[in-house]
Length: 134
Image (cartoon, rainbow, N blue to C red; front, top):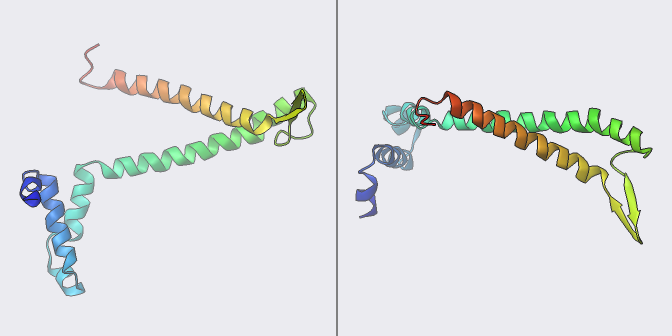
């Protein structure tokens, strides 16, 4: 019964055929099947899974670059202003409690930059969308 519900949707039926084909997989059956590699690639293109995957890859790399810029360029300037030995071990003492502030400050700067960039990117993409009703 569940299969009947899924077959109403073209993508689901294609995936079911692909899974069925691959479940009986031998090298000869896969080469004879018309639903093996080509159909899978078509599904990836139709549903924009490749675009999502590339977006995650670019976002991860951008995050690494941003962290490197903050750790390598910005935090040494902040440390030189505060007379600490290094920003990773920068601390302050309040009462009898020793608080490490270097690493949390770097993470806070990273988070703020990502949020600001995301908001502006969203506004830019929203402005350019054809279904904008504002």
